[in-house]
Every structure is written in C-alpha cells, then in structure tokens.
Length: 151
Ligand SMILES: Cc1cc2nc3c(=O)[nH]c(=O)nc-3n(C[C@H](O)[C@H](O)[C@H](O)COP(=O)(O)OP(=O)(O)OC[C@H]3O[C@@H](n4cnc5c(N)ncnc54)[C@H](O)[C@@H]3O)c2cc1C
Image (cartoon, rainbow, N blue to C red; front, side, top):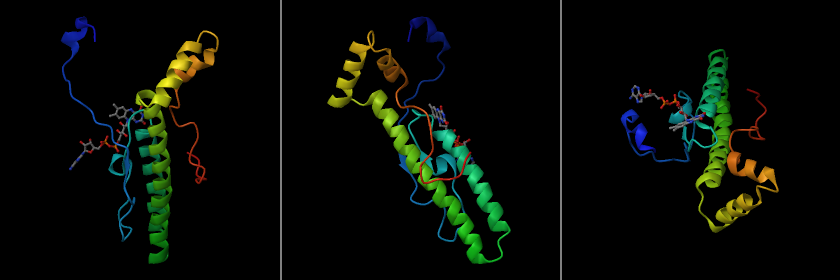
C-alpha cells in the first residue's frame, strides 16, 4: 500500500480461508437448524458466504413454519429434514463454486499459471481473455441443479 495511506490504517490482521460445510444442518432430533457461517465457511471469492447464508435462513423459516403446522411428529421431522437437506446440497455447491474462484485467483498450479500467461499474452487480440482474467468464475450465476426452489 502507498505510504501516504499509513495514517488511515488502524488495524492489520491475517485472515485464513476455510472451505468447510457441516455434516448435517440439523441435529438427530430435528430440533435445530443451522444457517450461515454456523453451517459453512467459504473463501470470499465468488461471494458465496452471505449469499448462501440468507437463503439458509429463508429456507429454515419455511421449514419451521411447516413443522409448526405439522399434524404429526413424523411430518414435523420431515419438514425440518427437507430444509436441512436442501441447504446442505446448496452449501456443497457454493463451497465448490468458491473453490473454483479461489483457484482462479490464487491457484499456483502449472496449469493455472500457464492459462493466465496465455490469456495475458492474447488480450490485445482476444479481449475476452482479459475479461476471463479480470472476472474469472466469480459469483453465483445459477443454483445447484438438484434444487427447484427459486430465491
Ligand atoms: C473479507 C470477506 C469478504 C466477504 N465478501 C462477501 C461477499 O462479497 N458476498 C457474500 O455473500 N459474502 C461475503 N462474505 C461472507 C459474509 O460476510 C458472511 O457469510 C456473513 O457475514 C455471515 O453471516 P452470519 O450471520 O452467518 O455470521 P456472522 O456475520 O459471523 O455473525 C455471527 C454473529 O454472532 C456473534 N456471536 C458469535 N458467538 C456468539 C456467542 N457465543 N454469543 C452471542 N453472539 C455470538 C458474532 O459476534 C457475530 O456478530 C465475506 C466475508 C469476508 C470475511
């Protein structure tokens, strides 16, 4: 950073990326539903964290609503289990999406370095290479194919 900004810096720390998803979004009795960072941690590339934490909460509320109006314990459990399953599938999808973005940005494999070098050398003749370098596979462009719910 340019030294002229030194006075503006009030806090410096290191930040470790995690790419993790809980084994289950609910407990064995289906009394608890996890959402957001309590259920998954992703690298920020791809903007998957809050963008999946909010749908976790929305789907959890829908599941709880169904559970509250269930006419049997079995139905109640099924409502919570469905929410938990749906959001775990999405979490795995989002984890993989942020891994792809992380790899694009920070990956230092020979293949990735070669792709970057080729793209950079061809930018002046193939402008889309520049867009690929700049934008990469960031951002959720579509959801997991298994899900039918629209947000
Ligand atoms: C650098 C960076 C960039 C990011 N960029 C994006 C982005 O572009 N797009 C995107 O979608 N996501 C992004 N994220 C992720 C996003 O910030 C998180 O996914 C989101 O904030 C998680 O919200 P949450 O409510 O689940 O958890 P948190 O925001 O962690 O909230 C949990 C809260 O619980 C409190 N708490 C913890 N323990 C206790 C306790 N025992 N008792 C009471 N309170 C407690 C904490 O203080 C905190 O306030 C980014 C994250 C980082 C770090």
